[in-house]
Length: 373
Image (cartoon, helix red, strand yellow):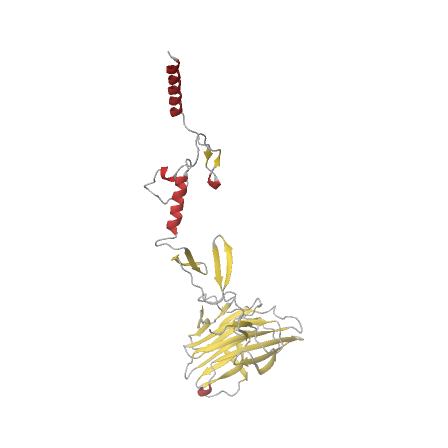
């Protein structure tokens, strides 16, 4: 065999071995595009036109357990693009964490707002974050530091508010807590004291102590030629003696063409004893169907002094009547009594202050104001 022939045989064998042996490209899957050494035997870069075309072009977000490749990266990219295009949206809009829409691509914010990045891709836009044009005091606003006994009647429970007990010996009362506040309805027409109460035995119980109770009361139905009383009341011991305990009421009188305020005493829920304060009542043309009421209670040497005061705006108060009673009240509450089956009143709040001295303002808060642009 000649030398030349032997050389070509060796060359042919080497060619067969190269074709039969897999080419190790030297890379493995990893972040940053993969890791590994460069493949050998090549110079330059592979043209993109030499890579096979994927006719399926699937939009798949999953990663296979093995054999992940550039194709899976492209599938995941297509999936993410599809989720924010077409009928889908770039954002999910929520109001108080309740979804409003998930097909939103444009958000338009107007006015001054506070923006909070809560993480995990969630941003909360709220309030009016700009500096207010002015502030004003509002006795309707819940106080910044309420007492443990305050109730704004804003839970919309539909019935007796949490923390209160219904006082209704004859089954005449309906209690509704809804978006209007606390509604008391006396549907019996027996003119008995009914309402809701909470225990006050620990409020200002020491000698020289005291407290003040504030409410805002409004009539919902004027009963024509019938009477309705509603407002604040306190009792000696409803819990132990619900039918025989002493009761004092301070409230609005409406109906029978007369409107005004009065303080009344009862030896039990349906036995009127006296009316120590009953100022002249205006005719219907001068009717006031809404009052802010407060009772200041002061304890001194086992004698309990009560000051009954009222206001038309919650800012300026008028001292109506003062009296003393020997018993320590165990319950304070809100009442209604009517001799008409349609007696109905609404209470906006019930607030308690540990201060029993006259004050210029009802508990409330300052409100930010913004001028219209």
